[in-house]
Length: 107
Image: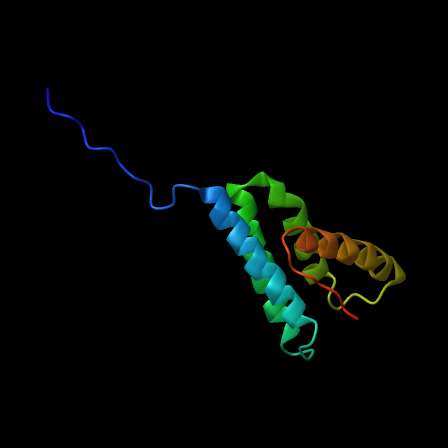
């Protein structure tokens, strides 16, 4: 009987790759906070896309993906509702990024 060669996945631990993507996205988000109005929306949208991809592999990142996507969607919304929810969402995002070792704060 001939042994069948095992196939090795290109990434044997997709959760670790998702975590690495989340760390990079959080770092990008922090960087975006010091960028000008013409630059930061692209940086934040890129970070949100990274976390969305990570959430597709590991559902524990779904809340962070939702938070980033929401904040990107209200970049130009000056309503009091968007500002209030945005502050709450940003705090949640900051806490989630801190949990992976990245400090995100606008101060």
